[in-house]
Image (cartoon, rainbow, N blue to C red; front, side):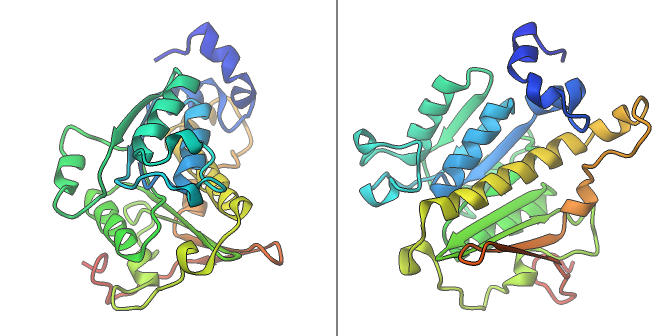
Length: 270
């Protein structure tokens, strides 16, 4: 699907990147990203992806907007209090980014309603975990493994942030979220219990969006561009997948480690 002249101008700064180019921008326009959770992480990640030219985004969240959300969830204002997050975010994103089709599902993700979302007619290019609780993260990880969708998961609480990506079809020796946090493990830290600053959430959301864009364009663009580009491209999804990144916002330090696979993991060991 060739870019229009208007799209070429709008995304010209991205197209100038050797690792993106016109073909990479076309890939973004044909991509469909599923975002679970439209709080602090989902707000900014969705906005960056829509602004970058991703063709379709589905937002899933059953929560309503509260006044305490406003310092981190920058798509919302006091006029939106009491409204559903996914609905309001979709409306505002569609107004700002006409090239992106936004779907909003105004309910929480559950095991019971997941078959309706992950059906044979609905193919997602990427799954973003922007949720704010441990049980939903475990379910998202389970669904990503089951439906073989690349998962990009982020979290932020206090001054600590975490980012990881999972696709065991492409990187079979790496672990999943359940390998890192088994379901019987107690994980109580969240921004509701320990607090968080808006820019801390924004940092993780920006990195989540950046990783997502890298993964989307690297799926096909590398083979095409290597025909005309002599040197290897910088984007390599095998280097991004299966990695765990931890950010200390107080000390401004990033740490990286390979996400090891647990041979006894109840989700991915089979």
